[in-house]
Amino acid sequence: MTKTLFAEFTAREGAQDEVARLLRDYADQVREEEGNLAFDVYTKASNARAFWIFEVYRDEDAFRMHLKQPYGGPFNTALAPLIEEDASVLTFLDPLI
Image 1 (cartoon, rainbow, N blue to C red):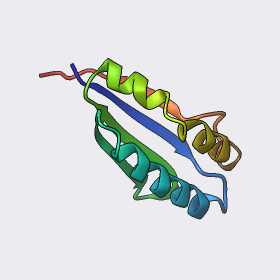
Image 2 (cartoon, one colour):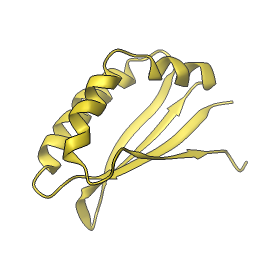
Image 3 (cartoon, rainbow, N blue to C red):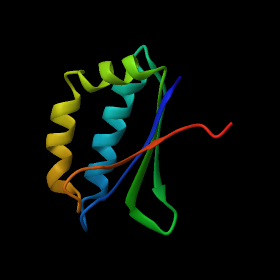
Image 4 (cartoon, rainbow, N blue to C red):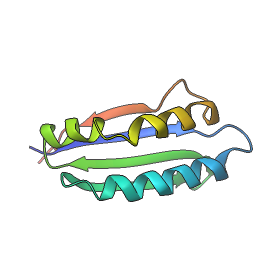
């Protein structure tokens, strides 16, 4: 079964451009992972500081491999001071059908 999640966070005032740059670079790396099926980044139409990321991995093992990639830690370290939350808020999803 695929592993699907939704990550969300809000960039601090004035930090949205730097967050967007970090996300573009990170997305390029994640999309190259063998087990990644989707890594789609959005901003809320009514609030450009609100970021939403939809992620799909082939299975639980692929997701675990994603978490072990060497670029994840530096990305999260760089992101942390730029967002309002303590970390990305993750929501794991199960298919209905």
